[in-house]
Every structure is written in structure tokens, then in C-alpha cells.
Image (cartoon, rainbow, N blue to C red; front, side, top):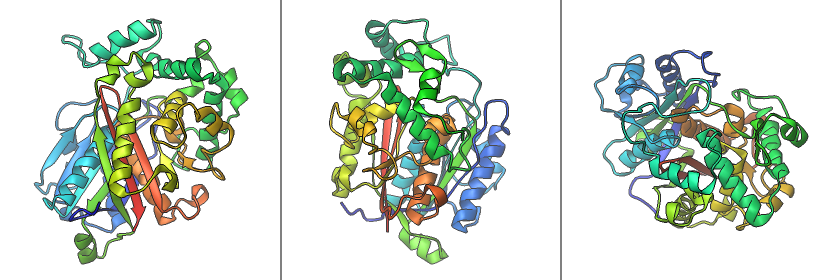
Length: 396
């Protein structure tokens, strides 16, 4: 489906993610990522016409605070908060602004300065946006002593185990694969290779369901992308080798609660709808994709996302892993960056770090991680509560 103005990703940049307490302040990280994206594009900040800035943990107008470090040009700056899909939500808005013709050049920026430990609510004097999700999880999973995100995604993995006989070792193999990819990524935080046996032997956080290494930790970081029209790129002599072929954002449907299935609670159908919309809009199928960055906040979510994105059939994910079809030499390279399992998950930055990796892949700039001949790259970024953004990038 050809739109009037295709959006091109002409510059990307990120700062290496750090453990909470070890990073710079959010505004310093965000300014550094923005400058890196501008330098990658070869563009001055005063040419950017709008900015969409994503973060979850911070007071209002952190976006302005961050970008004022780069320049005070008076442009519209919109602060975006959409849980774990925040970075891709900023990208969605920047892409939409360019494609609609509202602007010729927009910045998508995402960052997070996080605290150690499991993520939780910040406002305890009002109803949680997760109230309905929590109730469903209580009913389906119980185990109230386990931190919430672990119950959500571990519960989804457990449902897959119970229906299809998937073993805990399958999730361990996914985590081991992530470490092999991360070992080749200089901006991954956790670069030590681990085996499936190492993952199985790690601290147990949910007996029979999850060890500590199967979960991604909170980290701090920032990433950014410059989105523009072809005309703008040509006018300013910018790179136009990567464009957004299609993009979709979905939110929860009735099945989230009506199916009484933890996989639906964590967005299986939401992700499937977003992927299907992208495939239809681009006129391709999942088999045409070369490289994928997907939302592996837990190894369990990576597994069910293989099926949601159509990379394998329903119930076939364990075989997909065992056959090595999720890595180099297989059908798809999933998370060549090492994913969230290896970089951690600074909520606002994650989606734009995924974008950075895939743009580098399509440009042929991914060095030891390079997927040979990559022409189509799929991104999946999911936030509970909920929102899912899938983006298809193509080599122009």
C-alpha cells in the first residue's frame, strides 16, 4: 500500500544502557542519543520540525528538559507515555506526522532513568490502570508473592507449557541464544555468553516456570531516530536507504479478559493483529522478513511472540527454537542485538533501540551481528495496559 509520503529513517543513535544508579541523568542521556542520531543523519537540530519524546518514569515535560540541552528552537515537543511500548509510540507519531505531510522532519526520542528491582506503580492514591489485568492474573495464576510482571509473563509461558508441552529448557535456550548475539554487540549491557544449562541453574524465581536469567532487568538509557520525507532527505543530502514500509499500533480487544488465558492478558492477539496489519499493508508475509527485533522482556514472551508474529505456527515455537530457526543460519535472526534480555529494558528507550539495531542491519552497518542480505526488518514492541507497535522497515 503506497502512501503519499513514505517516512524514511535517516539517522539513529543510542547510548549504552546502564544499571540503575550507574547512568547519567535522564536529560544527559537523552541529549546524547539525540546528538548521536543527528550526527548519524548529518543534520542540524534546527532542521527538526517536531519532536515526540517518550518516557514512563518522570514528571511532565522531561522531553523539553532533555531537548533544551540540544537546542531551544521553539518547536512542538510532545511527551509520550505508553508503558513498555513508549519508544515505538513516539516513533509511530513521528512517522504519522511525516507521512501525513504535516512536517517534513520529526524526531522520535525515548529514554528512561529507572530504579532497581521489579517495576511497580507510582501513584497509590487512585485506581491502577492494571486493575482488570491484576484481577484476571489473580484468578488465572495466583502466586501473589511473585512480582507482578513475572506473574504476567511467566503465567503466559506456563499456559504455553500446559497446552503444548513446552519445557522450561526451551526458555533457557532462548536466553542462551540472546547471550550469543549480545556477545557481538558493543552496546549490550550483558555480554557474557551463557548456555542453556547455565540459565537452568540460575536462581529460581518461580519453580518450574522461570529462573532469574529468563527475565530482563530494568536499565537506564536513551535512543533516538530522525524521521523525514524523501524530498527532505534529497534536499539536505541525507541517507534515504531505509524507509518505514508499514507500521501498526493496536490496543487490547475483548479477548484479553474474555479468553481467560494469560497469553491474551499479555497481548498475544494484540500483537498478532498489529503484525497482520503490517503484513497486509506492505503486501508481504512473515516468510519475507529477514531480521526481527521483538519484545523479549522475558524469554517466555519471546516464545509466544514467535507465534503471534507468524514466524512459526501456533504451538510450534519449541520446535522453532530447537531447529535454530530463531538465529543465524535459520529462518529468521531474532534479536541480533541480544534483545531486552541482554540490554535490559529502559521502558521509553527500548523501542528506539530496536529501531537503531534494525536500521543498522538494513544499512549493512551491524558489523559482527550483520544478517547477510537483510532487506526487510520487523520490529515488535509491546506494553501492558496495553499497546503494541509493529514496524516493518525496508531497504529502499
